[in-house]
Image 1 (cartoon, rainbow over the protein chains, first blue to last red):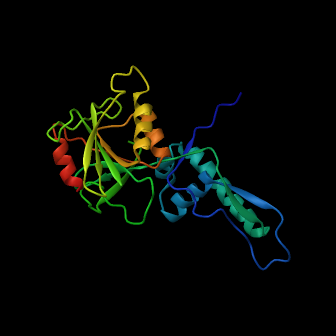
Image 2 (cartoon, each protein chain N blue to C red):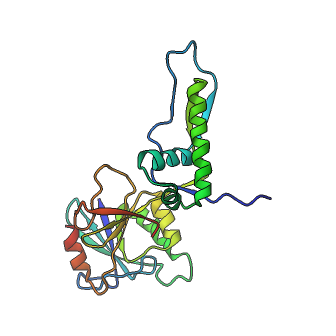
Image 3 (tube, each protein chain N blue to C red):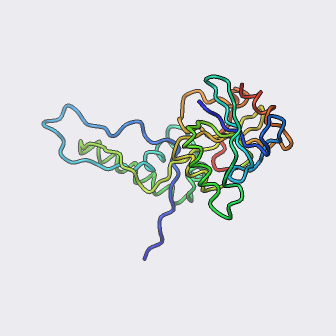
Length: 135
Length: 104
């Protein structure tokens, strides 16, 4: 039996269920399945500009594993683009992480179950907070 | 929204409890009308699974935010699942009253 997969941590699931190409003849029949962890890998590496070690730490996996997920994510997106296929997001081997924040003013640690744009400290309303990952 | 502060006793002068599952009492503060009440923790003496039971109690009470000293892994899982915000404070010896004043 192969070793079981370590759960990848995802801070926030994607806000969409998929992407559809338009301007093609007829509906695209097939689709590419993008896992949540692959979406998260693309987001951390190419949107938040983290390097692979930092991103891997946030997701609770090793750097080589992160690189593999990231590569598979890029390949799937490239495949969808060139073959004009739909992208659908599916729940992979993940756990949704209620990630921890640290308030730099009053040193309270807290989670944000409903991620909003401006995350403020629930104790002193300070906006000076920092993402610390796992507590 | 309701907020729970873990407490060692049943008055505002009681010390803030750093444990969640085995806290003595819970101070339930209702932001909507500014009232608070104290609820005894029936699972404080349980040999195991106190965190889960207490977390379920929080869901039952309709709490949106819990302030305590630390949360065990099982309690964390349940609270995460029900979108309850967890706040960890490490100031030992603080009274419930002083914590309550901060969030008002």
